[in-house]
Image 1 (tube, one colour):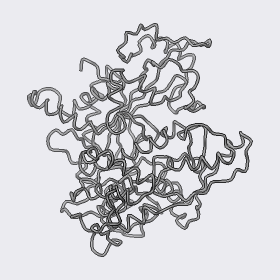
Image 2 (cartoon, one colour; image 1 turned 180 degrees about the vertical axis):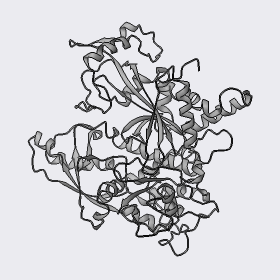
Image 3 (cartoon, chains in turn orange, blue; image 1 turned 90 degrees about the vertical axis):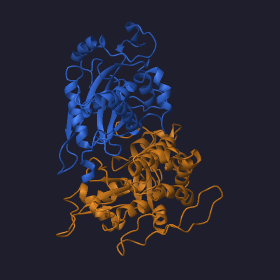
Image 4 (tube, chains in turn green, orange; image 1 turned 45 degrees about the vertical axis):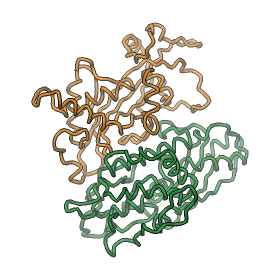
Length: 312
Length: 254
């Protein structure tokens, strides 16, 4: 039986017993309104062709490409759509999708970070949370078809690299929860495929039908919660082992997890107005939320809680 | 840090805490000080945290890649200067010429005549085909083991691709095995956990089972109290199997 959230302090608990409609060859996804809402989260993006590149081929005033992008998706998965738009607009590009890259205000965007995380970092965190009012939307991203910055961005082989990286994260999450990657490595090829296919085709049932098993971990309490914490100003990402239970075997809250890594920003007892907030999927969860519950219900598809710290 | 993250494990374990790791790399630094110029790099993970460290080493390696000339159609057309990579000064060229005579060869199963490794270009330049390789030994808090990160640069400062890594650093007889290992091959690229720029690395998930096996067999053969402690020899042991695959090893008399 998975650990229950603390009474009365968390958003609606996810019920994990009823099943939704079954697609023929897919394990069904359990009913989980929180996970569904997160899955359906999206950001409108305005992709504009880099001005210098456009000018170099004599194209100016090329229309931007507006796209409603899933927060849980990746830039690599959008490239074919983005490319098609600009090619239709007279861009002559016959290279590989792998040469396409994106920046926001001059900062190259990591294609291996989920889109929602990129926006949380470059949009919301960078504005110290001000932009939560939607003032940065549609998010203005520049697309490049040349001069891939191999010193700043991992060189992509487009969708294949994205899938490899995604599966690496799934493996790492498994290792953190169980101390080995046996669970993931023992998944059949078709099960592994179901995970990636579900994500890349934006099919909630297909994805969660399989992900559910990883999340529930056969009812075994995780050794560590897969969590990554992003401070502003390109600080090294915090990835420290975070046990979901304390010395008395009680479930820890998000506050306790954050306090262990960032005691000054997240004191256990607040003595004044909070100096920092933790954001995920563009929202600021209540810090009294059970950490294991957050891990099971609010993680990104790669099974990690990517928490972005907003300094007030 | 949660208390369980830093508590010293009872008895030797293939998994390390960060302080085990720091002890182990400092011991390794001391052990190799006469052989290989590893350096200890300190950094602050964030305000209020004690400093942490990792090891780095730069080596010149023969490149078996035959041409550093025309770019292929899939690589970037712009040469990007990589921060930290040296631009070759004429004054340094003399030193490099001397070093070229002592370059480490990665055994590839062929019998290469040293002279044949000097590639004479179609153009007027005589270029030594070598790579400058940076190796970093960094702690992985998730896998709780060291991870070997590396990048390789051509003389003009441009970084090389994964294919060229396989051709130049991985011994020929290992290439198939490494490519096919794990979910995505034994070598991948990701952001260096401290520098946040792209680095190649050896996947760490096989490290724990391997080290556990070695630990088991060592405990069967050594007498307690003899020789260096487990942590003191951790890096030598770990590097001797991890590093071989990509051109860095421990001196044979260790």
